[in-house]
Image 1 (cartoon, rainbow, N blue to C red):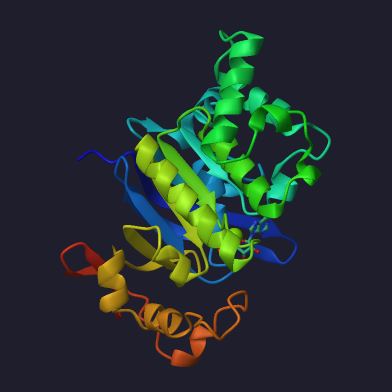
Image 2: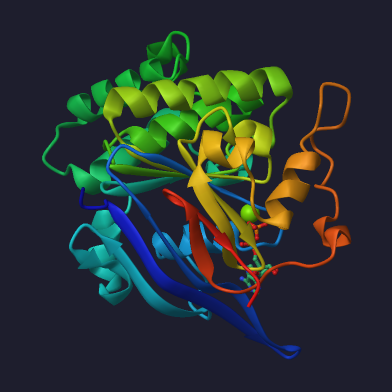
Length: 296
Ligand SMILES: Nc1ncnc2c1ncn2[C@@H]1O[C@H](COP(=O)(O)OP(=O)(O)O)[C@@H](O)[C@H]1O
Ligand SMILES: [Mg+2]
């Protein structure tokens, strides 16, 4: 099948007085229509930079190379004007921090209505309002017609994340990029939001790029997993295959660090570097659709 998204040899670097820092290093992967792929890795491994690069939301000073093929189009070659019509309509982003991603001085109804209006100038005011209310209903905000004019601070953290998801899905994008969408939430709410995302993804048949530092979360939502380290993929496989038969020592160390019932889920992943040798050679297919880096 033709992929929906094909990231091809993406590199992103930042320059500062301290020198040039490569955040994403020659990264390639693709997502089929309706598929869910997780990017997982420690903090600083380049997950968010990858997500932002796909939607062309990076700091303009970032030096970006490679291609982001969305269907037949390389988004890295599009003028900014064209990109604004792709964002939200073709691919939409759910951010980690709903409090900073929502505008605190605008009612949530108005924010969702604006997201609709960007792509649907043909709809009347009342039709836009109706759509926004339906969007809130779809993420189980109780009595959305009464909550339409409320502000973000009048909702709980879990509800704010639901509102962000509603906003991302309101134009029915074929790709949802969710960057640590449950990390700021407590475990019970986290499970509810994951369930909601899974359900909405299935109902809309959208593809999902799900980003997390937490392998136990990834296991609940992704069909395939790509493990990132220092801006590169070190291993990529079907979720079940990766968990049952991890090949790269970095993946093995991440799996060993998966929190249990009794440990702190929000603690940073254990230092994988203690393992020692990290094969940094080419990605090799070790089993069908299971690729891992081997020694050079
Ligand atoms: N705007 C920026 N300017 C300079 N460096 C950045 C910027 N954004 C991210 N980085 C750097 O890129 C690397 C990858 O960051 P990021 O993608 O946010 O990691 P992750 O999401 O995996 O935790 C980090 O070293 C980070 O400091
Ligand atoms: Mg991040």
